[in-house]
Image 1 (cartoon, rainbow, N blue to C red):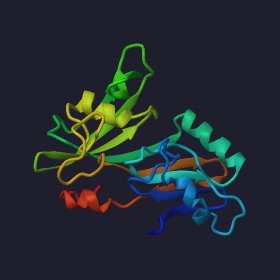
Image 2 (cartoon, helix red, strand yellow):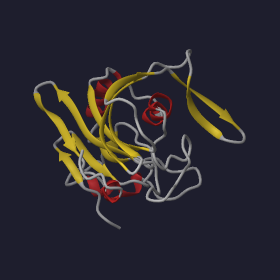
Image 3 (cartoon, one colour):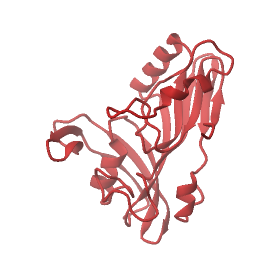
Image 4 (cartoon, helix red, strand yellow):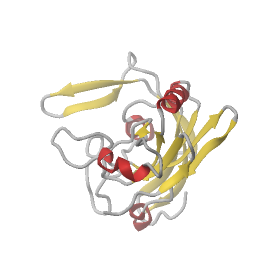
Length: 220
């Protein structure tokens, strides 16, 4: 079992580089999850830190963890107030028109017995905003930087499909699922910045994963 890198550490917070494929919460069907490895992140503290926000199981990269209840409350408030700067890198399974832009689509959840649940654009849904910038193109794929203002479930995945015209490579819900060169949804939480009153900001950056580099994308 490979150690999970710690990208930032102080008395109230950790940012780890969560590997793709590791769920934060225990799957209904059972199996490993981040909680099983909580002791790794105590680093001399008596209490294990807890995740502040969610990353999909397939998503790799920056995950903020709080070391105590007061810090957790402050960080939750910062996310709610949109005071957290988040940068994601995603491989879009197709060409993307334009070089940059903003996607504003309200999202809501639907479910069916056949397909399970998913998020879709809907006028009566919750507002969601994502800024994007094209970084590179290679072999019909596009590396895109996403900066979400809001944190809706599956926001970037739906915005890629509905806003850019193609899903994230490997996405099993909004795309074709695992394909050659992508055994997972190709989304990486590359950077996380949180301003703090009276303290230096939390600033963490997660290096590009090997599966992005294997597709020929070696920079962010």
